[in-house]
Length: 196
Image 1: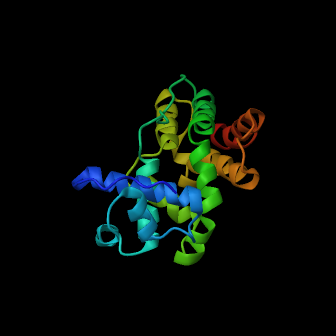
Image 2 (image 1 turned 90 degrees about the horizontal axis):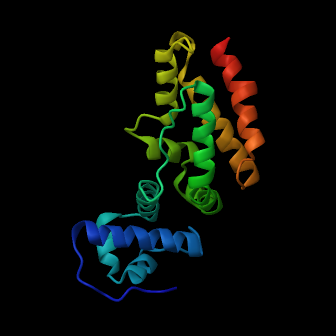
């Protein structure tokens, strides 16, 4: 485990260093072996600095997940191909390409977090998407404006369906979702629900 030499950081710089260290500890050692002490050591600061911000390991890990997921290194953008089908397929392909590593790390490391805190993967999904309009909602809203679909037929579950099926496939296989499966999710399951 590498440590960062102690430096005088404050505010956002210190918090970023701590959350980066927590993510590195989680991916290197797993939830059970992660400790506020190991995070402090990796970040080059004292454990009291960690405890002041996050009193429990669960809170620290959740904050690190939000930090990592919120980075704009390779953001997923809402596609606008001009059709509902094209937009949904393009969105799922983007997630496959840009978020696969993060998703697989979460799958591999978070079972212990969920057991220890009594939370679920869905709780994490809700936390990560809190306050954000979903890409799928934007896609179906545009499709409704274009007259492709009747918005009165859409429920939140139907809007989430392509992403939920994609996520299920990812969770079950721990690998990228094959393109043929993405197209099948859209063409044989989602579109018949919203276009008929």
